[in-house]
Length: 147
Ligand SMILES: [Zn+2]
Image 1: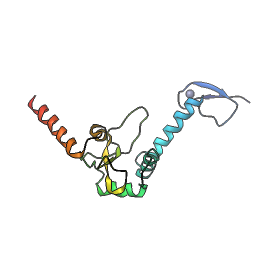
Image 2: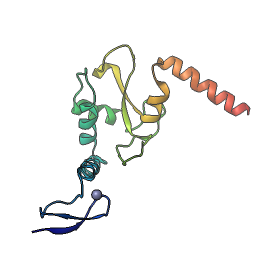
Image 3: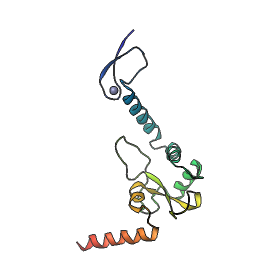
């Protein structure tokens, strides 16, 4: 038995002998699985942090600690104060998504040494200390105001 289907990911027609296949190819299947994971994680801090921690080595953090930390921060970025989000979109980096920032970049990821900041701030800060980061932010703002 051959089934005619339309791929749920790329909308291309395909044939399959398996009635449960939704995707036309391995590639579409992996895109589909990532999209499904994103859907589950969106607006679900537990799942979002669980995945975030799975991408990090050398830490002693737990999902419960991160959920506690974000509540403590009122769901706002510790450095910029913008509202943090936990949404994924394929092919799109959401700059307000929460990320784990080490207060002292030379130390490890442990509860006492982390804060949650938005993606944008985390990438701007890089390896700067918080003092250095603030200095450069101020310089940018001063310069931008003068222009
Ligand atoms: Zn496809």
